[in-house]
Length: 374
Image (tube, rainbow, N blue to C red):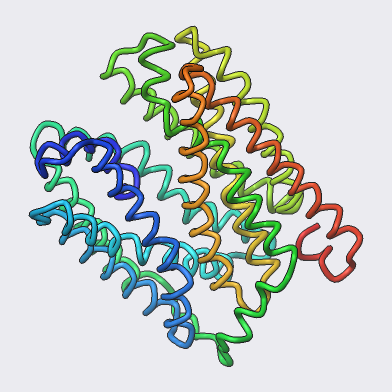
């Protein structure tokens, strides 16, 4: 919620802090930078601490950062608080994904990870629309108070219900970092940063696409975002099942290819309201179906450093967010209209598909990689 709701209340924040909307956009980047830096740093610091304590501590930091954001008196302070709020993001999802996999029954690890990431989909269905409404009609500061309260509820829930798991017995930072000398790990990070960037090239400009091309009103955009969120929820569940049934890398290959087709169809379907709504649902579903398989790929490819690799993948997703939004905006700036980012997104997804195929082929040729990736 805190990552995406800032986009909905950006005009309110800009007006209140007396800055331009482009300048306020730096607050989005500050959060993403916090994720990229915090993911490996905090996981390394907590490597010898039990996961339950780590997750609770990360949520405390998260709630604290968002509470500070609600009281930020200036743009400069807000920039710092958004960075602080982003620091625990990648580490929390990284550690959480590994914990979910460990708690799952054999053969259902990806479904367990998908269950955890379902929180992202509920954020898009409920949290972001509610937060945006509160920000528009009352105050954006109340929105961040709500996020902080949700964080504290998460702390209580973790302490009450999460089973205890011991910390790694022989955690060694140097050994964990050595994992990143493996080519397949960088190829998987490439799938994340480039391939999933196709989704963000579309989603970053969905509002002007729906308004200027499809002909929806500003209020209709909110309902379309909820439909996208429902698609994300469905896709997230489907992705976990696909990864457990066929293997993470095969699921990733097929889903990236489906994303290519879907984004191309969006560029044509956006001229009509019914087809636009249908493709908004489908594209959101495909995008979030990729999360669990890719996360499983990282965990499987980084034995003995699962939490570090899983956390780094969250930083890669945020780089994907920034890359997709930037590249998707280039053809708009060049005057090609709001259907042009979908073609950029399709190209990014296609590159990700070829990288995924290369990982699949490599795993089939390398016996020790086949059980984990193939």
